[in-house]
Image (cartoon, rainbow, N blue to C red):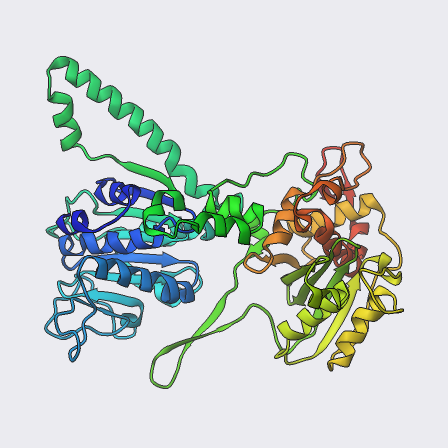
Length: 533
């Protein structure tokens, strides 16, 4: 710990690193230094675990490679440990994603040649396996002594529970077997955007209960004799540590106006969650009660393969560039929304979304909201292989508005013209009338729940659709049994993108494509969709 004590870090980072708890959670907003503390954790313990194997886990291998590995490098360098290079840094003590020098010690369970590309290996044999939820190759042959998890709120707890925790084995004859941190599980995360990601807060309650019990034990022993309680605390490490941190805890290392700049640049909702760690809760009268984050959300994923030299490569498999795209529009003078979707096999994916609002920027004022949306789509999917798109959306799209459309064309005509002028083949599928409220309500929840085997599973990219997901989770149903949405947010919301508008675009495309399925369902008085026999 001497190197840590000499390193300039904030108080919460120091507390985390000093703790002897096996289960530690660091929930930190932007600028809190959570990535740095993970690197410092590695730097503070690698010498104490010779030949041990720990895991650094993340949602995707791309995330591990681009965020976690640099954070570990940074933490190690802060402590005076450098990456080995035979020519430039022969004094280095670790190598990244490559086989170590032959004279270095090896871990008790030595990785195969192909696995070293997923490892950080130290001179004393301490090894970190880089394990991602989306790449099963990184899971092979795990037998580990500890777990580090990056952005744990984005990871399925099933992956933690079924893949990582059962691999906590190691050797009983290892010199570190009785080390307080052996078989440790430390996670580092921003606040969760989803209800399912709230498993990261489980440690908090356990930590609070533990503190209460340790305090009672301490006071009881001190009553028997001064010093007994203190001795017991020293001999019995805590089981848990939970802490939350914001940029304010790390202000000493940040520009004075860091918080103000974040507040000015970010939407209030994102600022509250991603900076201040505020938690997202599910509303009891939610319109989209069938929505389940673990079922309906996915992160941008990748296909992994090795090139001719054996080096790992990856490419996005978020959607199919050789198939048609589908879009759905919602029109309003205050905001226009576009959802980009694709149905393939047994999934209906919302792969992207965008909104445009009236602006004071003169260059944007020259374009209507629809022209801005059309331009965004053309740019975003410039490299799409099959330039065919099906257009769905608001029945109101066959009208005109000065702010929404600056031409004499109706909304749909103007949007379609932009796409056609840029080489896209367009098939129009817009709604001619608004769907029956009860059937609409039943269908969208039927689709989200995934209970109809004949319907594709609805999947929403949680990385590219944050505003849409917020709106989806916060749209309320009226309590008058009309099955209609409570639209108050469209007039009262400070940030219009979090109002109900994008959810209407979602409904339109689902109803147009899958409305026929509602004939096979009925609505029970309990509010549960059931299948007719």
